[in-house]
Image (cartoon, rainbow, N blue to C red; front, top):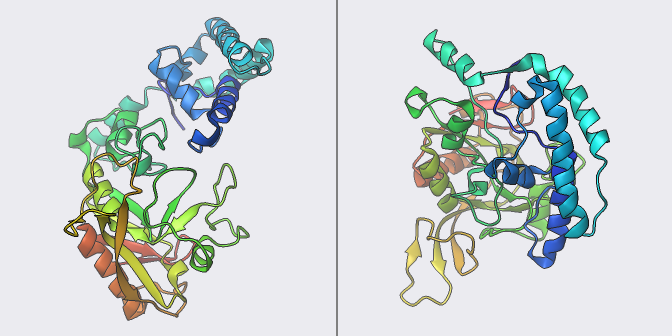
Length: 336
């Protein structure tokens, strides 16, 4: 295990600020998870954040922690009328973390670079989704980082010439947590069917907040956009088994703008994607399939209608599908 010396710490200060700032937005809240990510990135951009490399000098780290809490307490108490944090308690807690983590702190960019020079294969696993990207997502309903292929390279500390493949992972239907545009959003029985009840860990409920995720038909306008900004070479489609039992399945292939004369369609995302409310999805409706897919292990095991769904998804998105998942287990994968 190696931890990047340049990684920033999220502290109780950031979580406290996240919660009071989100509460102060009222109806304009952006749906933050309250984990302190946004305030931590604010400190990073202001060049006042705490990094893992700070842990390597215990005395200086302790002083930085105390100053970090005192500074934040000014905002918590005077701007948000919130309770101040105990600077000494936070500092002591993080000094304990430092003693545990310090042996693992390294220049991970160099570690990866040397592995590549030896001819080893490196797999980088991203998080969140491209439409939450701070620059190219549905701003302001985004995260504070760059959850794209280019953002991964920045985090890894390697250049684009080292990349051979960019694999996009997409669910067989659309989901979103929190506020923000969602043209293909569903409500009612079909939404409940796709979301699940929350009884299973793979049901569509937020892993941090437990909030039910918003669900809808797969939006290939957004997928094409994501493929473009990430430079996808292939796709992995997950949760295909969830669509089993539906009489028909839909995919959004374009938009039209409500009230716009001439019936113009938009196959690509319009500029300014924070507000997609004027745009209405145009769907293709495909036959559903009734068979459960959990036992499928080969392409030929999938029902013809499921195969047709995957083929059409690939055609419209312009990206070949490498494999699909048909259940929550590691071996429930079908190569296409």
